[in-house]
Length: 409
Image (cartoon, rainbow, N blue to C red; front, side):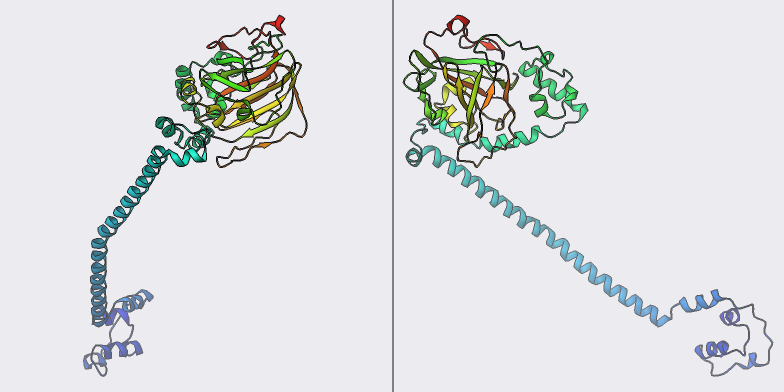
C-alpha cells in the first residue's frame, strides 16, 4: 500500500489497476472502491525507482549467473597459476641448454683452431705462428671489440660526468691538457672529441729541417731497409712489398731506403702531419686485424704491422721515393685522411683498394690525417747513404721536431 500511494495519484488510474493486478488483485479492492485517498504528487523519480528495482526471479537468476561465472574464472585463474611455473621452467631449461651449447661450440672451435695448426698453416703459411699463445691472442674478435668501442666513444656524455671521466684518463695517461686548444674538459661532448682534441696554435713549432717528426710519440725503431726487408726489432723483419704493397721503391745511385717507426701512446696527440715537402700519388687501404701495437706486442708477435689494418700514402720527395703509413690497432679502426670524405672501414672488407684521381702536395707540418683512437706511424723513404739521424730508439718526439741533421741532406 505504501508503494501504491507513493506511485499513483488516483486509485482509478490505469497505472493503479496494473499495479493492483501485479500484486494479486483481479480488480480494485473493496476497501478502496469508495474511499477518497489522497496521494502525494507523482514524480518521474518514482517511476525510475520502480523500473530499476529488479524482480525476485531476475535477481535470483543474476546471482546464479554471477556465481557460475566467478567459479569458472576462479578455476581458470587457478589453472593458469599452476601452469605459470611450468612455462617458466621450460623457458629456463631451453635458455640454459642454448647457452651451454653456444659456449661449448665456441670453446671447441677456438681449441681446434689453436691446437690443430695444419689447416691454418696451409691456408696462411706466411703469417702462421707456431706459438699457441700468439694464435690464441690473434683469434680474439678484436675488430668487433674495436667497433663497439668506437660506437661508445661517439655517445654524448652528460656535462656533469665529463670532468670525472676525462679526468681519470688524463691522470692515468698523463695527457697535456695545457697544450690543447680547449683546456676545459667539459667542452668535449664525446670521448672521441676529447681524444682527437686539437692543439693550440704555436705549441708545436715546425723545424726548418727537411725531415721532421710526423706525430707525437716514441721512436720504436729506425734504420736502413736492407735487401728489401724491413726490420722493426731484432730477428723480426719482413718484405717491404708485404707491408707497403706493390710500390716502386727502387733507389737512385748513392741513395738507400730508410724507415722510422713512431708509436703513439694513448695520451699523445693523435693527428699525424707531413714530415717533409712531398707529393702523394697513391693511397692504399689494407683491411686487416686490429691487434695491439704496444711495444711489448710488437716484440712478441712477428709481422704484426703486416697483419693490421693500415693506410699507405706513397709519393716522391726531393731524394726519391717517400711513403707514410698509418697503422691501426686495437680500438683504433678509423683512420681519417685530410681532405678526403670519412670512410667507415668495414670489418668484413678483404680487398685492398687504391683511390687517388690526382696527386696531393704537402709541406712540412701540414696535417695529413688522424687516428680516431691512436696507433703507429711508419715512414719509409729514400735518402742519401750518408744521412745522420738525430734521434735514438726510445726518444719521445713532438710533431715538427727534426729527425735528421741538416748538413747531411
